[in-house]
Image 1 (cartoon, rainbow, N blue to C red):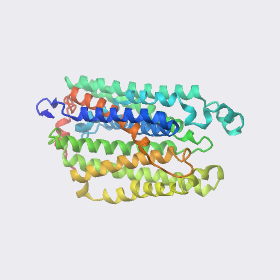
Image 2: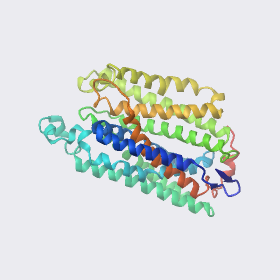
Image 3: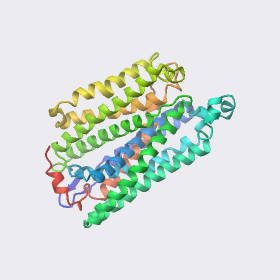
Image 4: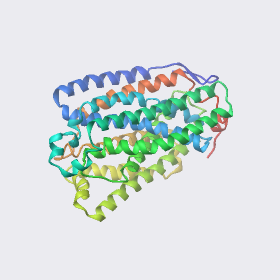
Length: 393
């Protein structure tokens, strides 16, 4: 991997794409074996993996729009990475195709015979039906993809020569985008995750999902920055000051996710309505209790304590470990949301859970790396790039 510090371009791709592609191919083989051996379990594993990788692209889209709306300067050096992550959303739309063609193994409301004998499902059938579900999912990805490519197109124009028109246009797109992002990510969480258990609902669920989305994205962004610095790509561009700020951002969303999660739990448990509390009871019985405790400790308590210390947030090694751990617990969080309805007898983990993660993740990272190597790794036309590189906390 070779980097030209004058043009901010990678002149040699290195082995990253081959490694990611190899992982994806192995995932494809394992996924095909899983199709022949345990299709229902694979369907749940595929949904978890598809939502996981899509969430990282959504985090990139949100970060990019937030950057433009706040006219942030410290994050300019990170912007191209977040842009390249959000550009993988169209690929993630393809990852959802198997789900759209096999709703019956995932969603109870997709069975006509179940709806015919369930008054609650009948009342929700105007929203929870297969054709409308597919239309909504397609609509989400169209909106996200259009926003991502519109912002990226202006960003590349800015690379060729900055004008205030570029900044104004990206800010305007981000303002419109935020108004579209909030309802689409909320309803996507209702459709893909909450409707797995169609009798249960929570009005705060979309906010909970968003907290996990941005939490996971920050972990991936931090891990990529550490990796590129180790390969002498971003050394001197992304500094310890940036990692310090990323660490503060991560700490903030550890607290935010935990606050929203506890608020949802507390209000439902305090209300003590059987139609609502059973969702948590399922996750507090047998081995699911262990998974719940892992989330409490690993998604909140441990990261909260670790990220309180300034020295840790400025350590490349520790931040690399933290980013990997955060990605793991983000997946565990989605697993905790998806699997209990399917595995009421208790939690379990097999190679089938790994297969779609490798397949979709390989495709995601190959697409990301191709974008990284096709353009400068930072927005060279941004007038605040020098300010970002010299940023101090």
